[in-house]
Structure formats: C-alpha cells, structure tokens
Image (cartoon, one colour):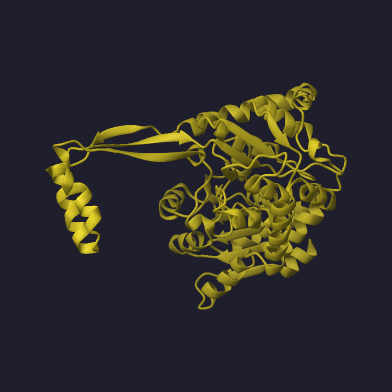
Length: 438
C-alpha cells in the first residue's frame, strides 16, 4: 500500500509536458525485444517439429508431461466436469450465456441484393469461417467467462469447426468450470495446450492438431505477440493483451466504487496492466486514491495487485470535459468507466470514439462487462482501440461481394471500364468489357 502511494504518478492534462509524459506511460505497454525474439523462436520450433515441440514447451512452461495423444481432452471429461459443476455456478453461467447470446445475435450480418446505378445486380453474402481456433487463458486464473465471450459467438456465426486451446496445470488438468462452460455451449474439440505453442499449433498445424483459418481470444504479452507474428499465415481477431481500465470521475463519483473497479482490473496481476484515473479535480483524485489504498490490503491477490498499481497506475487531472475526452481518445482504453454527472456522461459518450467498451454511471462496474452484460469482453488494448473494435459475431464470418451485369447494364459499365483502362494503360481490361458490346 505504501509503495503504491509513494510511487503514484499524477499528471496535469493542461501542462505543457503532458502529451509527452502520457505517451511515455502508454509506451510502457509496448512489447520488449526479449519477448519478440522468444516468441519467434518458439513459433519456429513448433512449425518445424510439430507435436514434439508442443510437448516440450508444454512441459517447460506448464510443467505438464503430455504425449501428443493427450493434447486433446476427451468429450467424456467435458461431460463429467459439467456434472460436477455446483448448481450456483451453473446458474451464473446460464444467465451470462443468455445475455451474451441476446446481445451478439443482434450483430449477425444479413445478406442483401440490389441494383447499382448501372442497373446491375450487386450484393453481399456472408459465410462462417470454416475452422476457427479460440484461445482461453487458464492456469492460475482460468478465464471461464472467456469461453462464453468467444465460443458462443462462433456458434452464433455457425462456424463448422471450433477448436479451443487452454493451458493445463502441471498435472494436465483444466479447471472444471472452464470445461463445463465448453460443454454447455456445445464445443467438442478442446486441447490442453496454451501459450505461444498453442498459437503456433493453430497457425501451422501439427501431426495431431489441424491448422485453423483464424485465431481468436485474449492472452498475455507472449501469446498476443505470437498472434501478431502469425498474422498472414492465419487471420487474427485483434491483439487483446493485459487488461486496461480508465475511470473518468467527477464529484458525483462514489470513491469506494471507483476504487473497487480500479482494483478489479489491476487484480489480473500480470504486471503489464494499465490503470488510468482521470479526475476533474485533485480532490476527486485524492479521494479515490485513498480508497484504493484502503481497500488493497483486504484483497486475496493484494501482492500482485499492488505491484500492478506501483508500475501501471496513472492519475490525470483534467479540469474540463474536453480534456478528459482528449485523454481517453489518445489512450483508447480497453474499458472506460464514466463516473460523472449524467449530462457530462452523455457528452463523453458522444465524443470518445476509441474505447473498447464504455460503462456509464456509478452502478455499472467493468466486471459486469467482463462476465455477464452481453458484449464480448475480448477488447483491444495497448492503444489498438484506435483501429480495432471489440470481438463480435461478424468477426467469425467473411463477406463475399456479388456482381451480375446483363446486356443492358454492361453498356453503362463498359464506358467506365474503358476510361479507367485508358488512364491506367491496361488495354486488355478495357477490351474485356467492350468486346461484349459487339
């Protein structure tokens, strides 16, 4: 607690050096060269040696001695885990899954057909991606909710093959809750393989693991760097790394609530999380920080949470709504909480365009979005919200354009083709259209 208070950084958004200081803090989320080179080596080994390399790395990083025929978890194990699930946990999963399905079904893209100005038929068709790979972080903190936030969307999209990868403990065991969630959704292909080796197996395939077409899911810095490196060999959804939260607060914010939400995201404890507190006054910031310090010792993971706060917490005094929006749009936080007056919240919701998910009001903790509100909690981090969005059903599908001209409409189209062909010196292009006018 004392270390957190003594190391706390507070910036003033109106200062001349603010932009540079904020950029430096955000830069801390960048992947160091040591991680990049380590990931490159592991991926290369998996690509060259397949199952043998996967076994070696599973033993090295997870402590589990697995033969290739033990990678895949038997369907009977999923069923058994579901039967062992306590009634309260099953009830929570069912409730969360209902919300996830309700929200994400709204985003199912629809096919359409129509006529363009030439009179030609045009449209779009959408198809589920044939084979997808879902990464679910496990180990010390099995993210059961990530199963719902990824696999349920793949099912809504209608993907024919859904392969899930998650690390085991040193005995090769995967948490019952995680397996039960997979069984509930109807996933049958599950591998007890995690880390960079899992991403490599998905991208390149091994003797026992067929390659996928696209990789989905969150992970630590190593896993996300692996996704970045295999992009192009396979598709990737986004690069959702260590958790981030930004709380924008004014005098209407409840300091206890704000502090609890800050601690909830720092609790992930990888050491690379980023936590931002933007207050419209120093008094607001001080009140929330005092609550963070008071609540921290009572947490079960207080040591790891405290270390995250020591390195990854930044308080920013932004006296105007305009400054607060500017800060948020630069950071592009994964989770954004607006603990401000209703009129201010409406303005910020309108002006902030880069956040992964926005939680509005004192009664909307980020944890609701993490577990049960409905939108997927797989969200962009590390300022990737500037160009990535949170995971949605459409990400599990691909779009094909449809074009059909006839004898009448091609008369209009051929004129345009001929003009562009002349400009670009592509005679054959022009002739391919005009030849049909004879």
